[in-house]
Amino acid sequence: MKVSNNQEDVLITYALGSCIGVAVYDPQVRVGGLLHFMLPDSNLDVDKAKANPAMFADTGIPLLFKSCYRFGAEKHRMVVKVAGGASILDDTNFFRIGQKNLTALRRIFWKNNILIDGEDTGMNHNRTLSLRIADGVVKVRGSNNFTRKL
Amino acid sequence: MIVDELLHSIQKIPAFPGTVQRVAEILSHADYSVSELVSVIEYDQSITANLLKMSNAAYFGSRHRVSTVQDAVMFLGQENIIRAVVASGVVSFYRSGRGYGVKGSDLWKHSVGVALMSQILSKKLYSRKDGELFTAALLHDVGKVVLGEYIDRSFEKIERLVKKEGYAFLTAEKEVFGIDHAELGGKIAERWNFPPKHVEVIACHHRPDQSARERIAPWVVYLADQVCLMMGVGGGSDGLAYWGLKEVVQMFKLRQRDIEECMIQLAQELALAEDIVNVFHG
Image (cartoon, rainbow over all chains, first blue to last red; front, side, top):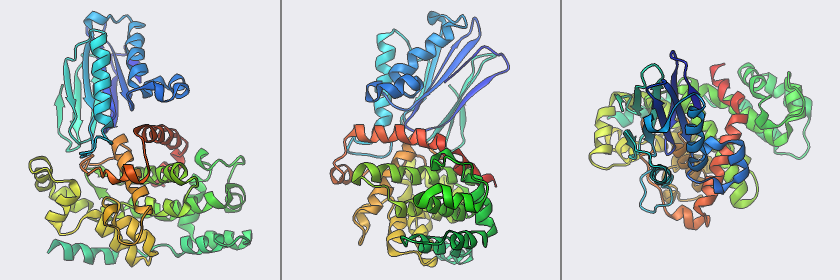
């Protein structure tokens, strides 16, 4: 996870397979943060979650927001964009960690009254997600190297 | 036919370094001479250079600083020295690789990830790390090294099959080229005179259900590969477009939780294995 108010910065996270990237940005104070989480639920391993809270949705997402607040961001102004959560082709549900990650994310956002302003999720390809601190532009690149603004 | 061209082009792949096989043979005996082992390794300059670059990886857990081949042999321990020598010998094949929309270094990182994961899984599933599996896992995608540039040239055609027709990437490869990267990898392993077990693991790493002889090993590498694809460890333009086979769940009596725990462990071990991943850059 990375949070910044340096206007020169572009935060970027690569190779989101079933992992999810969350980009948040407050346009007024021009503060942004980028989280790359891997698994939905920190109950899996509480010790690991303490050492590395960004690994899980339920510990990473609150940390992302709180870290932005420390730079003066406010929740009601935050623009939220997400990418990732891909899955392998599967009719068994067993490998659907991407979908579980998405469900966990939506549940956390729902509970906290957070709307998603843009997303590129699901399917079965890798993604790269970037956030430009100067203006909050979020871009997502798919594995066919096609880039689009979210 | 493209398939003939591909099969012809694997004839041009350099021979597998004999040093790796010699080292494996020496280490297969309970007693071996350190100086013999050192001289076998040092005879191969490329392997020696790679070995020295990665021997201090935290993954190998040596408590001493390794700066010579002698140190590596003394401090890494039997299990890890073979892993390090295999990786030293194999990385050069990936250096010539590109394609699948990524660089050879991504393909190498993915291969290291699958090799580490094969050890995590074998420890979890049958309580011992399986060094032999490490070699086959590290080479599971060697077919991509050859197929890569063909993939990039025909990507639109393949993408259409995957996105519009619902093909798995592997099936699309087979349709477009007459052979897929797993089968091609198996042919390369045969050319290198690999033991049948390794050939089968490589050839069947996406379809372990089609493995005729080996019951367990192809499934472990298959599972390791799927998890690395999900985690985005060195993933390419094929992404996650491969089939999940439900038999693997019954076979290993897996809970989803088990897989998630293995993912956490792999994330940690990859951080310790940075020197192994970076050896790619020489």
